Image (cartoon, rainbow, N blue to C red; front, side, top):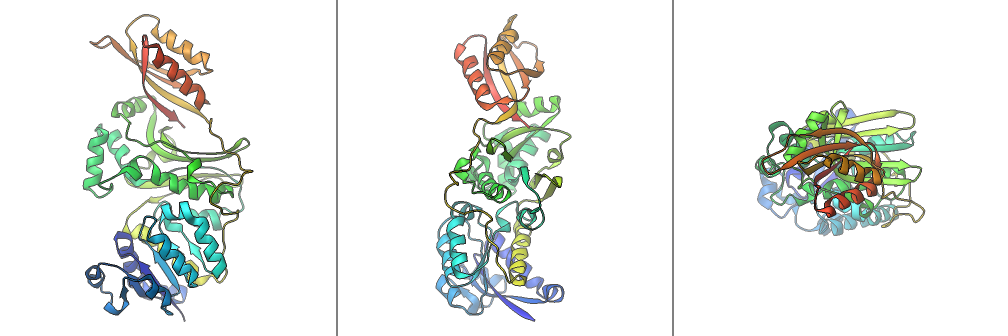
Length: 426
């Protein structure tokens, strides 16, 4: 029976879950896969944490050199997060001839080209299923199952923290701040939630997924990004009335005009499969030219769901002799021949605060029409005590720049109306 030695770099939530999965399922993997996977080394500063998991003291180290020099280790699992020291450790492992499995989305997104170069040079495997969408096997699906398709688009809810917050705001009518505090109390959101709520986490994941899907490097710097911090609960309620649900969406499209990649809050129709993805769950909706539409759904984070993806990569690495790399030239920057769409098309939800006077709606629609924007739906409420009238519009599909220019013109007038919210509609 083939024996495979694994080293785990970091025993936090995900590292601990990975160690637990590998050790508790060891006999199962022997029976099913015919391989004996043993954790031979753990790099962890907190020795007591490692000992509490039942790891032998002789297998605990604080030095990556010890891991690289250990002849019993074939595969290194990196679950440290962040750029450094993770990048230095991963490169050291690859340069010592050991294959690497990582869950580090920021590292792989920003420096995957360097890691892959080292892996190729040393004849090693580099696996990163766990960087995107937790336990949902999205990367393996794209690489090993949908490779017969030209992927036209993907649209996903790929951050559990923001999805939990928006679910609470929608279902309970609470404010963003209230929903965030609850997410933090439950461990879904970090004390500093910026990476999640401002969309950075989703951008890193979309960069990885769109590069694989469209077979060209899509740097994270090419992705339009907006977070959810400015979302008002009142817009979620108006959205309900119009038949929409609000999600933070990661959208990638391969169009005749170029690649379109964006992360932002968006309304989707309540009948769309993604509309029912709630709380901390994630899902990705993929469109291929042969398969048409496929949706993958599951836990987007957590110790054991992420460990599932990591261990899946470990087993795949251990049972495949040939290592595959990117289907495109994996460089830091985009291929100069690749075009990117910035003035994308969408429908738009626009909420205005207007004067309670005759002809105001006509003035608003006149400005929109000037910028080639037509209106599909309207809600006009009764006037309030301050003389303001809420007007909610949903436009037909138009260009992003048209909407931004129209909003700027309405707000600059300073008289008949002001725009309170603009949300894209998919």
